[in-house]
Image (cartoon, rainbow, N blue to C red; front, side, top):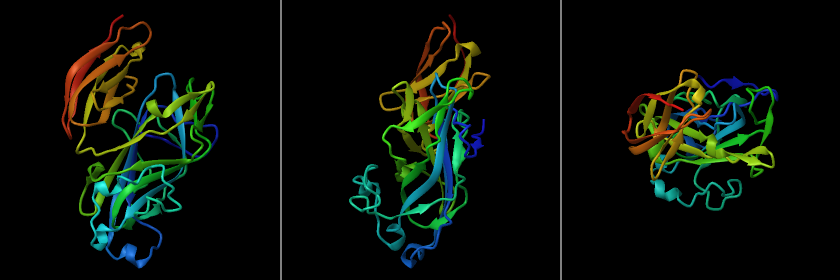
Length: 302
């Protein structure tokens, strides 16, 4: 299912799942000083998808702004590798300098409002901004600014529950390394973000709050696990894990699921069902970069 844009109305929410934010960043920016633009431009695409939670039927995230931080050192003849940014932490004060002093923020042209996150599953994603042209340089951070209308639902949107920010901060920061970029031509890049809702939404005094966990990944350097889990009323939640990675998927109405953004390696896939069905585990599932590991049909019993 495609991620549906829900315009800024307080009556709509994000459906819960694992959200992959595909932000197509083609760099078309506001006017910059000459030293920022004299090295040319680049096109970037950013995409987003999700990891689901079982007891929620909807999660709406209110995204108001998306910015990227560009370090033009490489474009101006200076090289900064990924280790250069190790001290550039998410919680640095980006407005007052400090350690986070490399580059400048550029705002992307997106449609602000509520986005349906649950529809971002089984390999689907959404594009927040497309073909915007920005100065050439190393993109090392993404910042999303959230609004105040995020919410969740347990009954398919009939009743909405406000989704507050756990930290009271509107900002979501994502640090990027070269390995997270998919190149699609000269100075054309795609960045994929996995919005891990299962680990992002916390219970808070009878309600819910959001502490975003967003992981960047490259489609070319990661793999997928896909299959079909039945019967439908088992409401099974597939989970793939090993010693370094854990990811989830929410099957569609036909039981089909796809777990994306997995680092190459060997995984265990566990199906956690409801309604009296017995869980099931499949061991030694090998994930290869750029490929899909096919599990076929998995049938659960009581």
